[in-house]
Amino acid sequence: MKFDWLIIGAGYSACVLAERIATQLAQRVLIVERRDHIGGNAYDYYNEHGILVHKYGPHIFHTKSKKVWDYLSQFTEWRHYYHHVLGVLEGKKVPIPFNLNSLYALFPPKYAEKLENLLLENFGFGVKVPILKLRESASGDLTFLADYIYENVFLRYTMKQWGVKPEELDRGVTGRVPVYISRDNRYFQDPYQAMPKLGYTEMFRRMLAHPNIKVLLNTDYREIINDVQFNRIICTGPIDTFFDYMYGELPYRSIHFEFQTLDQEWYQEVGTVNYPNDYDITRITEQKYLSGQTSPKTTLVMEYPQAYIPGKNDPYYPILNEENRDRLDLYLKEVEKLNGTVIFAGRLADYKYYDMDQAVLRALGLFEKEIANSRV
Ligand code: FAD
Ligand code: UDP
Image 1 (cartoon, rainbow, N blue to C red):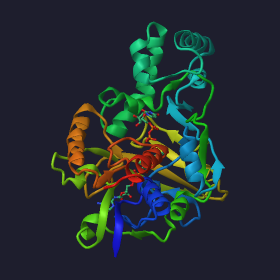
Image 2: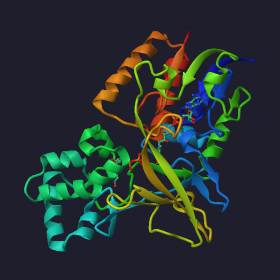
Image 3: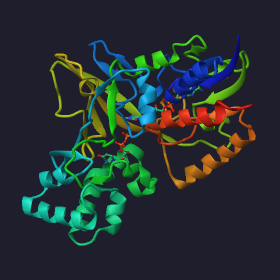
Image 4: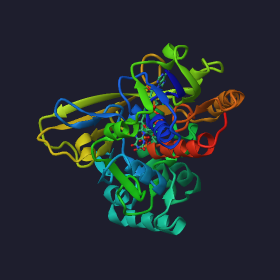
C-alpha cells in the first residue's frame, strides 16, 4: 500500500494533522503508534467501575482560541466544566492559584487586609503575578507574603515535580500558576473551558474515522519504516529519538500514576487537591469531577513525579532551561537539512510544554502554512 504521509504517533498533533490532510487534501495517511491506543497522553477509558479515567494524568480542556474550540467542536459535544484546585498549606485547604481568598483563609483578617491593600496598590485588581516576579519586586510586608507563597506553594512542589528549584527552570513553568489578585477561584480563566462529553478518546476516534486514514497500533515506526511506501513524514514523537540521539538526550520528567477506587460517593471537595509540602505526591484528582458522572464509587489518581528513563517510563514534561534549549537548537538545525520532507509537531517533537489547545493550534497552523500549499 502506498501512502502520501507516514505520521508517527496518534496524539492530538497527529490526529489533527491526519484529519486535515485526509479531508482537505484527500491524501492518504498511515498513523503508526507505539501504544495500544489512539489519543496520546490525553487518552481516557472507562475503568472496571464504569468511571471515565485519564490513563496519563488528569487532562482539563481550556483555551482562549475560538479557532481551536470551533475545530474540536466538530468532533465532540462538550460538558461545561470549571476546574478548581485547593492546595494543602499548613493543614488548611486554600485556593490555587493563590488568590485573595487564599490570603484570607491563611492569615488573621486585619493582616490579610493589609496585604490585600499592598497587592492592590502595587499591582491592581485582576492582575496575575508570577511568583518569581512577585519575589523580585516585593518590599516590606509584601516580601513576607512573596516568601511565604514561594516556600509553601512552589518550592517543594517544584522540587518534587522537577527535581530542581523554581528559579532553575524557565520562568514560564511556575508562571503557569501565577498569584492572582482576584476572588476568582477557578484554575483557568480562559473563555472556553469544558470536557468532551463522551471523553477524549471518542473525540479522537471520530477525527480518524475517514477512509484515507489507516492506524497501526502497537508499532514503533522504526519497525516498519522500511516496509511501507510514503512520500513524507510527520513526526510527533521525541525529536532526539528521531535523530538517534546524535546530540544527546533531551531530558524529560515522568510521572507514575496510581489509581484508587473507593466505595464512597466522593472523596474531596474539588477536582484536584495539591500537596505542595506533604507526601511524595504532588496532587490527587478525583475523576468524577471531570467526567460529571454519578456513581456510588469514586476513582482517584495520585501523581508521583519521577525521572524519565528511556525504555522504562514515558516522557511527559520537557525540562525547559538554557542548556536543553541549546541542545534543541542543534536538533532544529538537522530538521532544516531535511528540506521539509519531515515535519515535526507536538509536545515531544517541538520539545515544548504545550497544553492540548496549543498542540491543536500548532498542528492547524502547520497544516495551513506548510502542508496545504506545499510542493514538496
Ligand atoms: P502526545 O500526546 O505525547 O502524543 C505523541 C504520541 O507519539 C504518543 O502516543 C507516543 O506513544 C507516540 N510515539 C512516540 N514515539 C513513537 C515511536 N517511536 N513510534 C510510534 N509512536 C511513537 N494539557 C491541557 O491542555 N490540559 C491539561 O490538564 C493537561 N494535563 C496534562 C497532564 C499530564 C500529566 C501531561 C503529561 C500532559 C498534560 N497536558 C494537558 C498536555 C497534553 O497531554 C499535551 O498537550 C498533548 O497530549 C500533546 O499532544 P501530542 O500529540 O503533541 O503528544
Ligand atoms: N506549581 C507549584 N505548586 C502548585 C502548583 C503548581 O509549585 O501548587 C508549579 C510547579 O512547578 C508546576 C508548575 O507550577 O510544575 C505548573 O503547574 P501546572 O498545574 O500548570 O502543571 P501541569 O498541570 O502541567 O502538571
